Length: 373
Image (cartoon, rainbow, N blue to C red; front, side, top):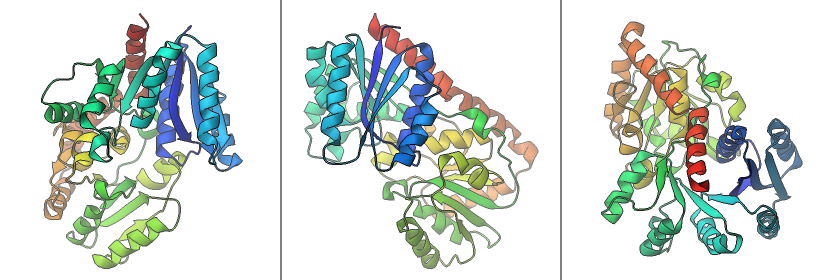
């Protein structure tokens, strides 16, 4: 295929980065359609880089341009991008950060390329930084294709701009590798499990507040946060604050390749807390939700558009941002028999298949072909 794709975003080249894992999986699946794909990134240690290089050897159409992380990284990666764009005339630039989108639009005419932009948690950049709302919208209009990663982002756009998007867009939620999660065991052991980051906007503290309202036989198994000691300190602070000694099993940062066996397997209920804020309610495309769905272990989530626009009450259990309600939902789920949960488990697998990387790459391939024509 004569079309070349440049993922114009500086990846943090280590498998401990959830974003890097998501991008590499996305584009490894897309490369199967014959596209030549360039990825750009920087690394701190060669061991992490070599892990990624070894993985990518299975995908001969993917070309990784890697530089050591320092003040010159951006300059060197831009040089690789320009060189590749000069050589390969039929190109698409895909961005996920607003600053890179603005830059991509300035070089669009120079290299006669198309620009595609993915919307993620901070994509409505004027909410978080000093960027003009009108200029933001104008740049979306200049882009050849916008990829919303959650239908709730379209809802939010309509609320913000009081209009349906007039630019070309597609909704493509994040993907999941179903085969890796489908054999996770479900147990009725009152072990509540959470994996993910502990960012304030994700409202992870709600889990500890909820656990304090449940009988003492309930325990929380939690993994994620940062790979340094800051996350452990934060978890210990929550244990002390809510008097949860011996009820929290914090497993620290676990590499994605070990999450299934070391965290998810043997869980009773999987938890998805979200904050009462714009990022949680509208802008996120929660990767953990898709992974949870593939396990077929019951899920309880805060009810907000970022989740309800992806799955319904026949698939997972919904509750509010209040700890009392979260705890009540957990008690209600525990009282259900396996037979009563079966319909939800079947719907979970059905939803997971919808969000598979195979399905996502197929839809993106169709849109890229439309851009090409």
